[in-house]
Amino acid sequence: MVIPHNAGTIAALGTAQTLAWASTYYLPAVLAAPMARDLGVGTPTVFAAFSVALGVSALIGPWAGRAIDRHGGRPVLMGTSLLFALGLAALGTSQGVWSLFAAWALIGLAMGSGLYEAAFSALVRLYGRGSRSAITGITLIAGFASTVGWPLSTLLEAEIGWRGACFAWAGLHLVLGLPLNAALPHVAVAPTEPASRVNMDGEPPPADRRRFTTVLLAYVFATTWFISTAMAAHLPGLLQASGASLAVAVGVGALIGPAQVAGRLLEFGFLRHVHPLLSARLAALGHPVGVTALLIAGPVAAPLFAVLHGAGNGILTIAKGTLPLVLFGPQGYGMRQGWLMLPARVAQAMAPFLFGVALVQWGSGALWLSAGLGTSALLALMLMPHGRTTENKHQPA
Image (cartoon, rainbow, N blue to C red; front, top):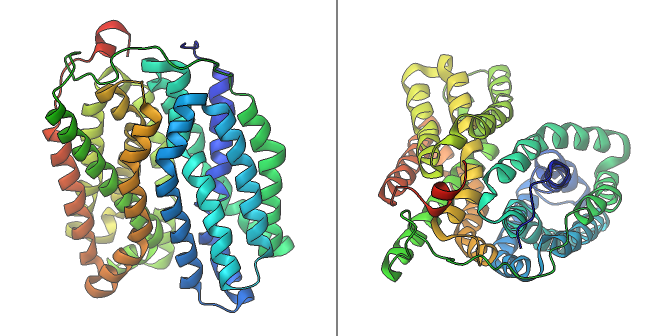
């Protein structure tokens, strides 16, 4: 059963996603240092606990996706609102290393079943092959998660301490996130759309082609998430290593969020009329081209780098939802999405540490590593079949 698009549903889910991202993924950047001081541990220990959360989220993803395939997104996302609240409350009461890691592991369970992959699966469960614009819509809203999360966490920490900030975020999940996820339409029956595996010409692809495409797609997701997380963790230091002042580095870093939203607006407007694979290929060019400009021209090209990286990253976030749909179809989407994103979650967990080592060893030259990875992702996208899908033949873009 496919439900017609509803702007209220997209707005509710997008707002719930903004809260989920702001209170988890973007939390350590502001609260890690005060947490570490109060608990008597090093700041890297807090980030190690956060990495555990990312690892747990990778493992839980396929099972969360299967639950959404069977029961729809509403009950799963409502459950994750409770998990987010419980995990953040546990974080606020942690007294040492073990309780810190246990709290982040609990938050990781919620992240694996309550962030973008789960939201994308919920939308595909509702809208089937016509989910592209809905996926873009929620990422447009949630693209402001850091814009909301970092200032609010900073304000809460200044007024009521880091523990109070955690409790406040937990409360928001109960009074805001839970009702928003409860507003999702209830889907009572399993999807009946046939052809869970279609190739770009609308015909069932051979098993070896499905496996090849799956491997390529998982590699693209892992590589691009590694780059995105590495830049989020180390961008100010990278820009300073390339010769920019601290003020310039902070100012340029502030361009990333708006550039991501601009990229998603471009996807929602012009690029929605082209094949998702083409828009993903164009987006994958952004980071390597931006790196090349930065390393050749120096700090003067830093704003261009930020815009290209941010816009590309914004579009690739949407591609993580649309490419599995257009390549394999809607049936079994949730579980497939969970498995496709498992390597990406692992890469995401490893990115801050591994890229940090590269930054220490090579300085700004570490950007050639990320540019090389971005180029390899582009090549993987180029190897994927391109043509008209069943979706494109029978539905407007």
